[in-house]
Length: 91
Image 1: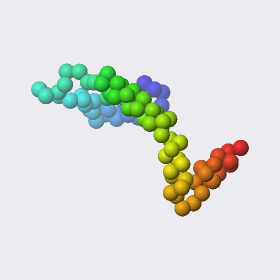
Image 2 (image 1 turned 120 degrees about the vertical axis):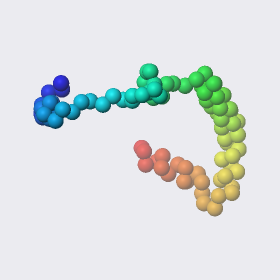
Image 3 (image 1 turned 45 degrees about the horizontal axis):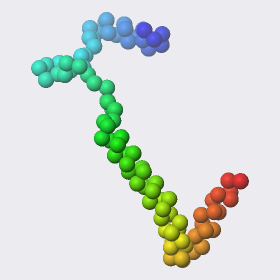
Image 4 (image 1 turned 30 degrees about the horizontal axis):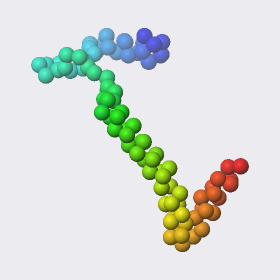
């Protein structure tokens, strides 16, 4: 089948011991067709993500600067240094 050495041994063992491959599921409750997991997203999910993204972007752009200024005065350490120091190492 795939040319790997174990395939020949497996084929011989199947014939020697009378092993037959199992079916996925048998009986009256077995599904007639097997479905692939993760069938996709519905339209409601995509609309929810689009609206939520737009709302969060609006809040971040409108109030981001104000929130940062308040954080700078409220934090016990120098916030600007904590924000810019990791970026300085990238250069």
